Length: 188
Image 1 (cartoon, helix red, strand yellow):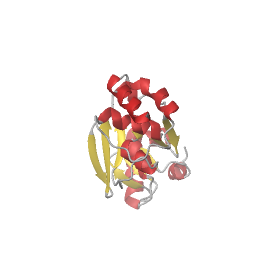
Image 2 (image 1 turned 180 degrees about the vertical axis):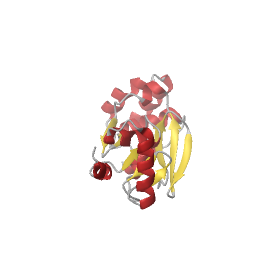
Image 3 (image 1 turned 120 degrees about the vertical axis):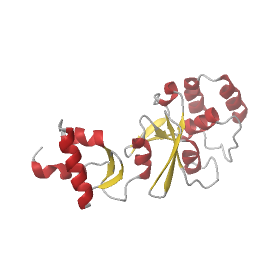
Image 4 (image 1 turned 135 degrees about the vertical axis):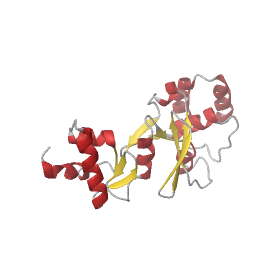
């Protein structure tokens, strides 16, 4: 890549959030020290926004859902974040809830990201997870099952829009008899 095109290559991307690894791939530069120096320069000049160590954005108006799935990978937005957006629960949600390989809460730019551990066989199975604008986001059916996987007793406000055929297609990946019984009762 030629000298003046490093920043342009990032700014032309459809993504709004980039990890250090993403930038190395975009720039096709194996000199990691040079990449770090260049990124530090762009962040200090305000050309890039440094979100946290190893994570950058084009500016402060980055996509928060995209950031949620870039901090810890593999991961996808799920649980109450999706359920509230899809109208299955009516409670207002301020946290962005994410299925991940770890359990952790992170606050960045006044937004709380809550990561919930899900077993790897479920986490890495893409059934019921859509890629929307660079973010991996669970469908309402997958989010419903994720919440039932992590909570033994959960109340849903409105299940009319749920595609039960899709729920039963996704359910086997959890390999959980307790969930099968609960889903059977919810469908009635």
